Image (cartoon, rainbow, N blue to C red; front, side, top):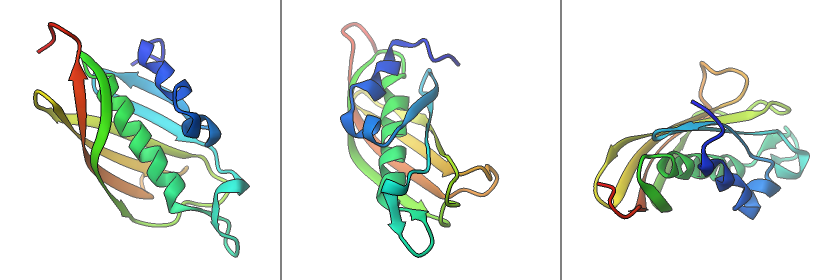
Length: 141
């Protein structure tokens, strides 16, 4: 996997992704990894310092979209449905990383699975499954 893929512009094209400090770590052939630093601006519980679930949701949605955009022949994408199961709170102060993969693709819909974790990569913060609509480049099947 490489970050030299043209879809690396995906993050730069999304103002909210830039605002959340998202970074495209890996991308290629229907897979993506995007990470986001812990930031006090995104705390959901001031008593614990835990990042808000909405920030985790945005990270997973963006990572799913990037995985679709990296699928061979994909041109554009939009989220149709995204289900997120939160397993635990992310550890305050730790970077959160999401990984997503397209596991099934039809003519117009890509099905994606994703996980998010903090520095404990064996213990997910959240998992997601979603469906993304996408347009293909002309001549792609």
